[in-house]
Image 1 (tube, protein in one colour):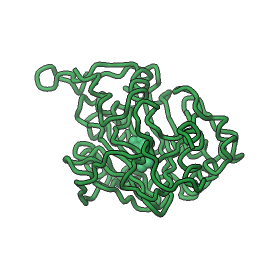
Image 2 (cartoon, helix red, strand yellow):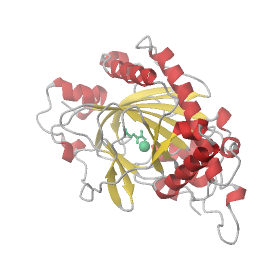
Image 3 (cartoon, protein in one colour):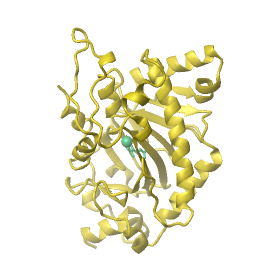
Image 4 (spheres, protein in one colour):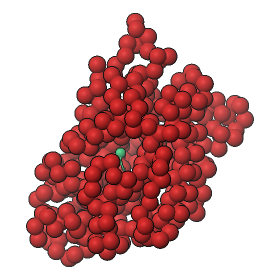
Length: 344
Ligand SMILES: O=C(O)CCC(=O)C(=O)O
Ligand SMILES: [Fe+2]
């Protein structure tokens, strides 16, 4: 089988084809798994943030602020997304990846900003290493899109994405407060109302030699905030104080992280954090992320309120969000190398 047909088939197709006697060399990824550290990622109780007593609310805001300063990642429990909907979303995602290759090809291999794009996670064709991951990416805000198959994808994902926005907006209020600003501060600065929202479904099939491959290489997310849920299979690792920390989120929680545009807006107070995905030999992992960002045409610079020319001069220059995404996605993903391009 040649590389071309592997790319067309996706990693799921390759794994299920029965051709996989050994790991094709294009998938072998240099290992960085020597420094694993077990640590507890902070947890935010969403119900205390949104419906708690004033005391509970201010404690929740403190937890968020500390998590953003020290981790850039936190788990969210007791949130407003119905469990039923999380199950339905995983189920419809699974059925999307189960579609015949020809049906998925309707959405495959198109341009970066096409509303619906699916494919297999080779490193944008630039690097030589392929990733052990198939994906579907759908632009769901300000204009909603959905693949036409499975038939219930549209209805389920529309409800899910809307409710994910609600959760993200409440968290952004808490984050704004934790910065000492009024609750709609980030909302206004980033024009979240007409902001972009991207739905990403990731499928990581089992791999006979998981230590040789990578689900997703170390990277930071380009937007403001990412909300991630997974089936019951773990694999995400966060780079924290120089060590990789594996994350075990409780069932039905969200794993939330701040992206590069949060770092830019807050002038580095809340940094985006590098994370990666490893795979395993016995179970398929599926994750569903919604990435929340400013409008594609917006240029975000460090906020005047968070800059002071003496102690905190601006650290980043503004770049149109669309150009930033393009820069990140058309270069080989490597840690925070994209953010370095706008660093002053
Ligand atoms: O699948 C995961 O656990 C993380 C995915 C991710 O980092 C991303 O989609 O940016
Ligand atoms: Fe990510």
